[in-house]
Amino acid sequence: MSISVKGKSVHFDDRYLHVELEDKRLISTPIAWYKELQEASLKEVSNYTFICQGTGIEWPGLDYQLSIESMLRLDRQQNAA
Image (cartoon, rainbow, N blue to C red; front, side, top):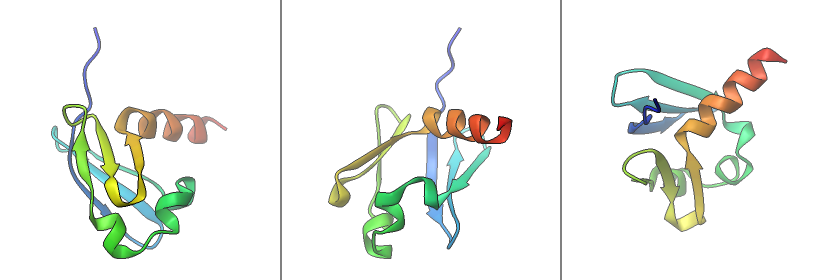
C-alpha cells in the first residue's frame, strides 16, 4: 500500500528547506542539495505552488520542481552514509 506524502507549507532559512506535511510532520533538508533554490532570490523561492495533488512543489519562476517523496529518500540516503 502506498501512502501519498502531501505538503502543506514551505519555508527556508539560511541552511535548510523545510516542508510541513498535511499530517503535521516537518521535513528539513539542506538547501545546498538544491543548487537552483540555493542560488535563487528570496522572492523567487517564496513563489512556490504545490503540484501533483500536493505531492510535489514547483517554483514556476525558476522552472524547478521537487517531489516531496524524493526529499524523504534523499534524507534517508544521506543519513545511511
